[in-house]
Amino acid sequence: MTKSKEQPSKLSFIQELEEWKSLFLQHQSNEQKSRNTLALDEREIDAFIEFCRGEEEVERLEDISKLLMSAYFNHRREQYYKIHKRDISAQSLNIAISRLKVFFGFISDNHDEFLDLSSSMKKIRKIHTYAELPRFSIEENNKIALSLQALGASIKQVRRRKILFAIALLFYGGLRSMEVLNLKGSDITLQSNTEGKLFYVLSIVGKGGKRREVPILKSKIESFEDVFLEVDGELFEFGYRAFHRSTQRFLKNAGVKNLSGNHAFRHNFASNLIRKNVNMQVISQTLGHSDISITARFYSRVALDNQMKALG
Image (spheres, rainbow, N blue to C red):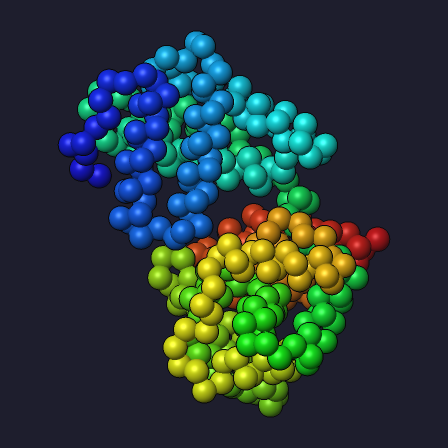
């Protein structure tokens, strides 16, 4: 990356961090990062800056160290427990670590005299607790399916039907939220397999602009055909936050605990495929992972649980 000519002036440590945050978010926006990524970056940086306000020993960027970062993440754990009366998930901590590493890397690339801040993060052990991946129970899966079926047959209001269809795509297709929201009517085609079963095949543009095809049984979403048939352009006019709120309301009304936002549907989808003994390569392709090792890393625990149940 070319070094930025516009560097923060010599302000207080907090002011300097705030100015670097503004430059970083502008850079992320110029790189056409999603609104969700920008919001996540801003939230994690703001949380770190707020922590630094109370650290008297930190007076300049060079004071950021592995010790400080360890103290910060311990602080995050303590604050989360005080509010929620339970431990913060490993997944949430790993997201915070990864976003701050990107932020520190940006500062390093654009600071004439500053060493690589992201190196302070490299020795902070990433936590992988596979059992913590959010997924719904068998009973909750049934409640979601029944609610989609019942509401799909009864709800007439156009916007609500679009929201229900979007939730159905999360549940039956394992899509990311932004993949759903960017979907066009022309991306959905009706096809049959060699056994004559009918599927709606979704042409999805995933991370990095990579396109993949995701088949969903016609019977699962045919009650929403009025939403996408004979529509070539964009299907959904609402944004991520409105979608997230609507999903929370849907789960609450269905009597299902919302585990960790819309992404829980994706983990649940993959876990269900593993329970059905679907090949890991097929799951990886369906989810749009760049490498099967990513799929194996996240879902190997579910596969092992299946083996133990079968052999127990």
